[in-house]
Length: 527
Image (cartoon, rainbow, N blue to C red; front, side, top):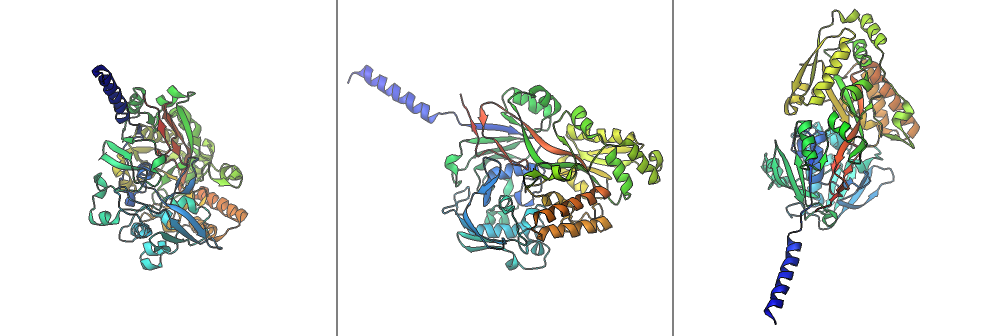
């Protein structure tokens, strides 16, 4: 063969091979504010940490492309006639991200570990719907009594305490841990080689202060449909710095937006808003601010549209109660059925203060506001401060890094505090959970606890646990929310909307109703 022809063939083959081998990886670079307060899944109770966890772990169910739950590691199930017992058949050949087998017994052991009284996980709320899980968590029964059992290697049976029509949502939270590592290595979540999950991505690199690099998990049950090769989670405190990185193309998905970002991209395809079933509220220390009239005055003095739009430049929805929009009641939303229970009325606020014995705020000690250190949280606290000053109430602000804020919150050294709750279930009960008597933990002095309306509230909520009649449950929830607004242990400020900047070449980003972000359906066009 002619040497020139041979050389041309070799060059052509080399170019073809090179184009295959060196195809640009598909990488999404993402940021959502500062570092999560907790990185360990078992001890997590923070929404921001779930953004990571849900891409590293997958439950018996997962959030699908439409934002609603669908079966994942559970291939099928059968339900008992009374709606209490579900028997799941797990997908054959399931594996952890390190390639080791994943069985029903791993799920059972992981579930019992998380709810065990010795671990004292603050994030067990969604696990306590399972029969006897709460009693076991309180040390009242043995693990054998808990209704979460592996019948064999591939069959898992879950028994709920009450009929649970939203069980698919709960299954998303029931994730398996690599228990031999978790039990023997207290720092397992600090190194990629021991941070083992079963989700669409696995940990490649991590720095608790800088971010995580996740790579596609080849052992994921649905790996063939995961297109993205890598997701870089960046922890960036400063919204201006994050916005500049987005503008330069260093980030292609950005959450935790400031007013500048929203104003700059408003009306463009890059600014995408996702509804979120969350309520941001002010927790009031019931022991330090014991008069309900003062607490109501604080709420009445807040001009929510001014705070949200004029001061923060946000697109949040002014709060109308504890239950947010996005929680449905039949074909309508709960919030639409009940209407607004929150308003601004400066004259009424002043009247209540005078009735409580503090005319113009005289005689009332300055309130201690605690909040976190982001600019939005500081601006929000300063807005409260100014609005309360307008009715004569003085206050002082103390700020804390996210890593220590909740430790301070668990003390009595505050009067009002930034707080909020995002429910992962399309049912009003989830939004009332922090105020249930058995869910309030050690901070009962600060919470709404053993007061007359709180006792009535708890009675109503226990009825919603067992009653299945839709209209009866609606009436019970309506009464419960009105009791909260009479005593005002929490002052609703806004309902969540998640504005996200997404570069046009990125598609398939999924946000669930509770705000969690998922990248397993995403794609990105490469050059």
